[in-house]
Amino acid sequence: MGPQPFLRHGPAFKVWAASLSMAPVNIFRHGADEEKAETARLSSFVGAIAIGDLVKSTLGPKGMDKILMGGGKGGTVTVTNDGATILKAIGVDNPAAKVLVDMSKVQDDEVGDGTTSVTVLAAELLREAELLIAKKIHPQTIIAGWRKATQVARDALREAAVDHSNDSARFQEDLLNIARTTLSSKLLTHHKDHFAELAVDAVMRLKGTGHLESIHIIKKLGGSLTDSYLDEGFLLDKKIGVNQPKRMENVKILIANTGMDTDKIKIFGSRVRVDSTAKVAEIELAEKEKMKEKVDRILKHGINCFINRQLIYNYPEQLFAQAGVMAIEHADFAGVERLALVTGGEITSTFDHPEMVKLGHCKLIEEVMIGEDTLIHFSGVAMGEACTVVLRGATQQILDEAERSLHDALCVLAQTVKEPRTVYGGGCSEMLMAKVVTDLANRTPGKEAVAMESFAKALMTLPTTIADNAGYDSADLVAQLRAAHQENKTTCGLNMSAGTVGNMAELGVTESFQVKRQVLLSASEAAEMILRVDNIIKAAPRKRVPDHHPC
Image (spheres, rainbow, N blue to C red):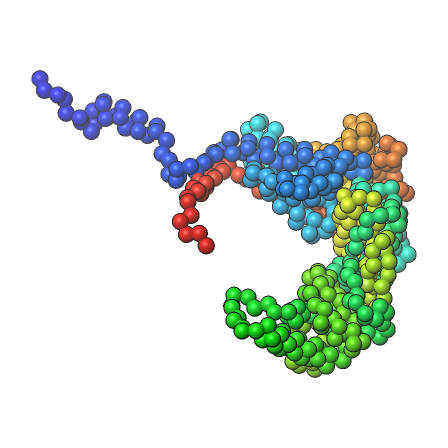
């Protein structure tokens, strides 16, 4: 009897076909990685929750700071409790964590404050979602419940918002309260009254335009934080040239970005062969003549102040001094841009058509001393709202953190001037939203109600975290706060200086409606996006190949 034929319908074929169907088919390039279903979802949740836990301890007026150390040669040290700054500085590899980091950056760019709140809320929503998925509730059911919860929370927030923009005195008080509330969770909390007034004065000068570029912040070491002040006009951290007037009135300014350093031989990439040093002198003379002609063309604009982004060498500086023109060199690009904005001029590079150049104007330029440094002060600039905030402090880290804190306050105030509605802080708004979401969950049949309850629970973690960070009994305080809101005491929130539940309207803990709304919407959208994920595919890393074509 010979060997049996391999029949397509025989038992051996069936076993072979079954084993083939069980073998995993890899369609990706070698080195690519794929995570499916539960594994993908778990890795997303873990990454996002870890990011939330990282910044959680910085939330609220009693939040702690983080030290971020750079890995470079200098090893820069940053001390901060600003959520966006912390998340920007850490390199994350988890895709869900990256979503939260980007969301925090957008919050910072959009409204300036609430960067920690938005990250913590999104992370808590995902923590709740993890528990619901463990109970076999489908992600789409959770998302449907969250969407309805977000809508009612947003409506409740809108109804609770108050608008005092018609009454200038009350609106001014609102702005001061918002600035104090924003600064109370930052380094400047002990000097918040001083800096709140400083920030409100600066923003009110903008007359509602919201051009924060015209507020210039200069940091100078020395003194203490209380020595910081607001200066009307514009300060440039540069020095006036040698033998030139140190004070000028009714100034016409030409702002330029041009090379004024060609009075010495600088011929790159070419060789000049001469038979005597006299010929070198001739070349230098020709260069000098070229420079003199350029200076004459600049002076034809009828100016008495010339500010250049690049260097001005000795010879042109001497020519300007002879013409009685103040010349300022090497004004950095940000300085030149801002100077052009506030003096009403334009940055020029060619000087052949004086009639087409827009000059900047200001009433007075003089040198002033701040600490041990000399700065140039421009007062009476064309853009009347321009001002400079001078920050003083003991160390560079304090100055950097003070600048970040003040920038947050300025951003929030500029947004509030455009969108004047305000809500109460101290966990009051979160508890208000949690209450309406819980009420909706009680009226909703089906599994969506469970998702809504989880949304309310996530909102309540914000006041819980604020109390925890201050070392108070959060369970007791949040229970009291929830009971107060059930009795329709809608202005109740956490009084962090006494560790009790207090009336936020009396304490003046006010926040911008725009900030709170953005926190709610950004966090729910980001959490929803991460929850939808059921597959993570990582591309194969690019192989390192030796470079056979070095430049």
